[in-house]
Length: 295
Ligand code: G1P
Image (cartoon, rainbow, N blue to C red; front, side, top):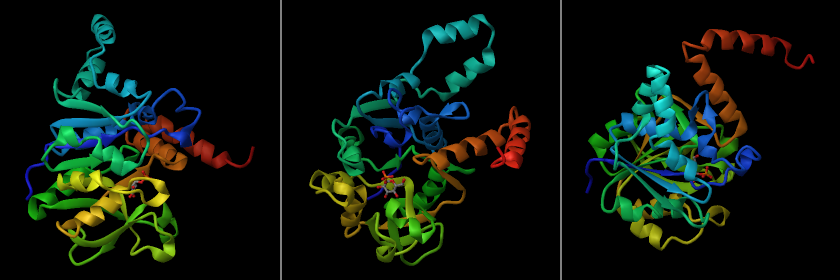
């Protein structure tokens, strides 16, 4: 059975070891791309797609994320006193409505499947969206909106996919593509982080999902998989025996902000999109590029 997707889950418990020392005391999800933290991009994308309730699966030292989605009374009063109405309006625009966020903890880093399972009591029996905030997916309409269009027609479970260089397959979940068009093809298999020789295709699971709640029952009994972690991909494969999974080829540009190059490139791309800084920034980049390697 399928129904309307109202809830989105954001796993934000990861340690961020690839960005140490920046992430020693600060959650990686709060690293800024231009002037917005990574997590804000995923929340914005979810809101644009009609999501009403935002569930964060956090961990130790992630309290700042909760503060980010709260009012900051002193700051707001100061902005008001100084007449900075634009900045104030911007802050208010980003704030989810009261009662529309939930925070739960993944107490041990046991894998993505386990993180998702930690949200089961909040999501309960509803279909839900899952957004991995490491991946910034730049597009209009956003990636989740593109998936919602497919979901309205096909129901079941939807995964956003993208093509990669086959040599990189061991960094991602890979799907086996069946019949159907790019905006909704059948997925007939999937495997987590295969070596190139074992990959069923070069379509990666790119970090956006619409899932039916039955996934939680499967995750309850899911044993460890690739990397010794409880893998969502393994649980989805089990669910695939009972329910349909469709792939939607994402139409846009993805930045894997779990990697340094992806994160830095995202900063460049979003800065070049900003009318207030694009021109000055482009000039700096041109100069840097012209002299790179000469110093
Ligand atoms: C997770 C998923 C993987 C997916 C990837 C996208 O892996 O397990 O299937 O392709 O996110 O970023 P992780 O990056 O957490 O190792």
